[in-house]
Image 1 (tube, one colour):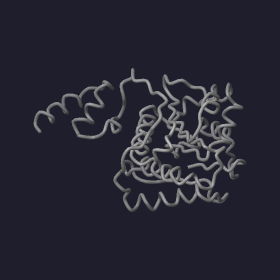
Image 2 (cartoon, rainbow, N blue to C red; image 1 turned 135 degrees about the horizontal axis):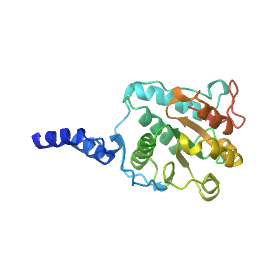
Image 3 (cartoon, rainbow, N blue to C red; image 1 turned 30 degrees about the vertical axis):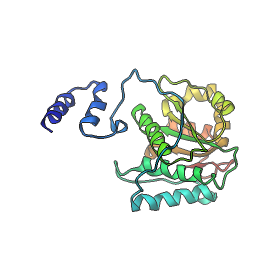
Image 4 (cartoon, rainbow, N blue to C red; image 1 turned 30 degrees about the horizontal axis):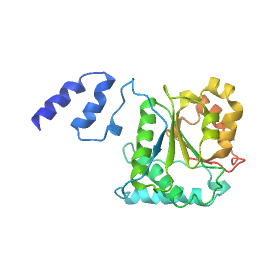
Amino acid sequence: DLKKLVSFFKILGTGKKRYYEEIAICLQLPSSCAASVPSEQKPEKITVRPIESLNPLYDFQSEISQKIYQMLEKYDPAKSKAIVALPTGSGKTRLVVETLADWINSGKPGVSEYKRFILWVVERQELCWQAYNEFQNVFTNKGKSSSPLELYPYWGTAGKNIRDILDSTEGDVVIVASKDSLDKKAINENRATIKELGKRCSIVILDEAHRATAPGYVRLLNALGFRKGQEHAERTILL
């Protein structure tokens, strides 16, 4: 379509963030593929209710998904930490989120109801939106109607109170957080609460594992109860 092509190249030349979603639209991609989102958009806590099925994962994704599921289903100290290494754009976020959906749909075998929290830590705000949108997409299409998911944004201008999240919710909870929202200051001010979150998480996911050795990530992982060369005292999995 010539008009769409002309429009695409016009907005491609701008650095303004509000045009990123228009680029995705021109390419007939979902808004979650946009490189960024309008700065005035504020993420909110939502309840995700399922409606219909998704297309199946590719074979290579399914193979990795099964291994992650096995980690969740039967805790093994020797396999309580893992890395998913795939090329950019190959669907890492989708396969991990869908694995979590399958596991939750099966009643979360391998963990108690006490460990009903999942923490997804992301480096940048646009990647927070990507994970947040993927959880909406997958659970809306694949979750069970009897088990809605509580999805909490923990970045940017969203409210940030882990104590409230731990105290006021029931059922399965996913917290999508930026690394900067859990920085040194936040850890020092909420050390006991973050330690409790580490105990009550079934799994903690670092979106960009190659950054996990940076001081900010090491500080956060220690605050959550992870120690180098040791399993988590409360059997929390790290991915």
